[in-house]
Amino acid sequence: MKMKATVAVLFASVCCAVIPARATEALRLVGRTEMPGYVGDFDHFEYDLPSRRLWLAAEDHGTLDLFDLKTGALRKSFRDLVDTPHGIFYLPQKKRLIVTDSGGDAMATRIIEGSAKRTLRLAAPAADAMAYDSSGGRLYIVNGGRDAKMQRTYLSAVDPVTLKRLGDLGFDTDKVEAMAVEQKGNRLYVNVTGRNEMAVVDKRDLKVIATWPIKEAEQNAPLAFDEEHRRLFVITRKPGKLLVLDADSGTTVASFKAPERCDQVIWDAGNRRVYALGGEGYIGVFQQDDVDHYRELARVRTAPGAKTGILVPEMKRLFVAVSPGESRTGAAILRFDVAPAEQFYRLETAAVLKTHSPEWDYVTLDERHGYLFIGRRADGVTVYDV
Image (cartoon, rainbow, N blue to C red; front, side, top):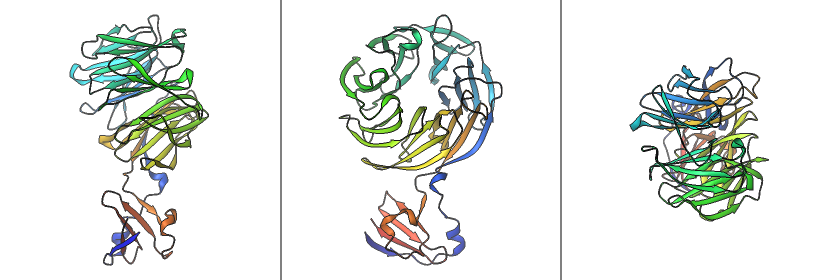
């Protein structure tokens, strides 16, 4: 590491204004919306930024709940539109909600436009996970399987505008979970949970082109994707682990303990972070230092049952649903502000700087320009070219 320059002395008041956030402040709790009277589990979120709407599937409570995206306040709870909702997709040009549902007599996917609803016929009843391919205009929906009391699970491709079903792919298992879609390629990654495998699917032809066994643990379920750096983030539940896979070969490049009973993993591209939301009562926050190197940045306390959420990058905010089935504190929606990646880190955590004076207080890394800044509150800042 080569010294680049020494910056002039800074006033103490200026330096105090840039005191670094601790790693545990990567997410800062800024609000909580209580939801008394709710029971069981929540499932997934969806949002629409222009209308400031945030939807939540209250799976076991049998409602579709609408919140104010800015304040977090509950606007309305819809009981007559759904039975056992899971995934939610909003199509703004049609002002249309598509909600997967495994309850009621039909166990059908719901199409909701205003107060009107209809059903979408898939290969089998009891739809659950969804993934949207914005580049191809296709919605991929998992249906059948365990909730339908079937030993076979299907993946159906649907045009969300015309509502035409474009094809189906069957899996010989009763459990298929989350998916990730390439937007600049032709691959669809599918967690085939019941077989401890990941299927790589041609998203146009709906044909399996590769199968990768998940060897490090069992019950691979939540999934997120860093398409730019070709990395998949897989959460297993037995035990709870975060696995980082090469999206081209399926090779595992990193592995960490993840919170137990995790239902959601989120890739924050702007900050190069992974958020693993677990029913164990915390969010595991992992930093991507480069494509092959990751570290656990923080364990942010939530509540038992806080295992699904959604990142709204435009607001730098993470919403988390606390399922009352596991939480003694009751049902709630937590709102976290996301601290930017260009945060300051304490000098003692940077081993590379231990040879320097222990009086240096803080360090920050400008990854874009390759500079490292260290300094004392009352003296100045030294800049290193890294």
